[in-house]
Length: 290
Ligand SMILES: [Zn+2]
Image (spheres, rainbow, N blue to C red):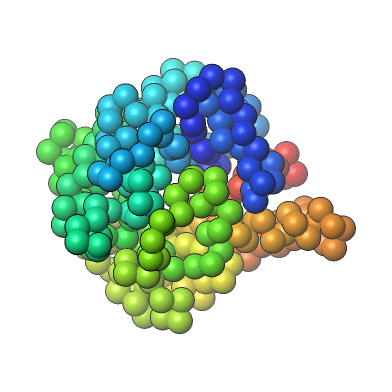
């Protein structure tokens, strides 16, 4: 179950494009995550909305940053929940890109160091696994060696290995306040027309030490999930992204389709394609439906 954690106290800020999902302050997150734990949900994935953004995305690797504070609170109150964190800079940079900008372009190598630092900071605050989502070249290896150097050799990496430059991320960018202020992410996300590139990216992440590989989005890329399932032995995760969820929610709100049936059919298709783990905004509802 993905969560968006924001500063403040008693904050529940509903998201227009992601019906039934809200930005939550740490105290509200603890309440909601405790309910998830009671419902039998085993894992949450945290995204942070910092107080302030800057050029270097410093809120991402601040040991007192929003995700780090959320992790400490969840670790204390929800001992059985597996805590995963999104590791990227785009929610924390003033320009909304996933890395550091130099001369108008994302500087891959300089960004790696900050991404690795973010991962270590999350694990030290209580994360069970880290999910680098930036798609910079070499980031899984950079995160692995930073974790190892910090003595965190047992912490697994869930790599967003095949992340396509997709129109279906729209509502998420409202939720994470991470829309790029200029350009797009095509320089580091993948071309939707290309499946073999996804397999190459996954193979690279596996060789760099990924423990789980992720395909994102899910429904428009079921063939990619299937191809990855056939080629690799690692667990495959799939992210049923905000746009996939919002389409069904919006149609259901108009009475055009049955949400529960459409959601179950979508999630079943993702499993059928070969996903072992599914990240979905329906997780909480699913736990009550099943
Ligand atoms: Zn990003």
